[in-house]
Amino acid sequence: MNTAAVRVEMRLCCKHHKVTVTPDREGTFSVHIATDCDHIREYAKGISSITMEDVTEMKDSKVTSYDSTAMITPTCLVPKAVLYAAWIEIGMISPTLAKQAKENSIIFSADPGD
Image 1 (tube, rainbow, N blue to C red):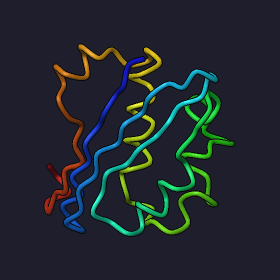
Image 2: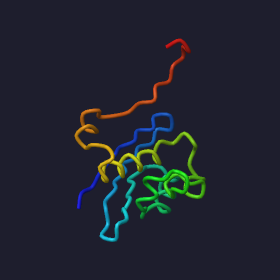
Image 3: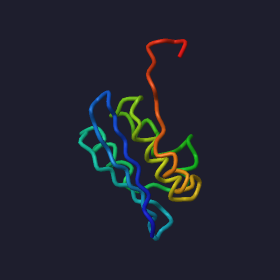
């Protein structure tokens, strides 16, 4: 079994997370989140096992549902990191491309013309 991992550096709240997604024998995925954030630890308890539908269908996904994410801010990138790791694991994102790209960014700009 392979494992895909994605790191999240949330500089606004000074929190760090490592999301690991591993396929299980039952066709589901095991999710582990190493974090220094109490809110993400609570979030991780609710998504420790996810299905293919959770990874591919946003509408009813446990990863992004209100019930799962109610304790974290809407701006938190950890749920997206879970999806990125899962997509790498299922082949929807190439591991080679992910390594080459290294990161995606959200850049805050003081100048609206930037």
